[in-house]
Length: 197
Ligand SMILES: [Zn+2]
Image (cartoon, rainbow, N blue to C red; front, side):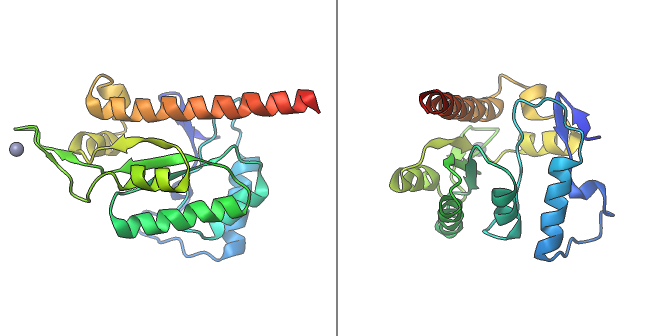
């Protein structure tokens, strides 16, 4: 049974290993774990199944692309040049295995000072959007680097639940709405295609 909180079901390898033990796994083990999570967990009816993968173009990405028909991939990046390079590789990998890339999210886009509200672009800003335009994929939005988001994560009370009207929560909601929109369009196009055939 997956853990459930705020209407979100979750399973993670972290539930099965002690906190101080690193996961050092070879490809077939990663493949096996992903297969178990997809097939043996009692998910019930879901609206969406999100799979949070480690960064890069490794075994987890390849396994999941081979095991299930994915609706699409979302690339999350920070705005600085070196992170964008990795994101571009990730994007190219998904395209190579015929998984549509639904868009790019820019994380840690800026820090807004809680005192004077001046915005500081710690890792630069706009790189995600520029990369999306250049690569011809949708830009889904940006998330600020913010203590409230981190606190929400640590205490198990996400910012979208704790303070849904805050700009931080709105950033997440807008990304989710845009992404859900893209998925609806994709799914309806696929249904049309099936009917024509
Ligand atoms: Zn300030």
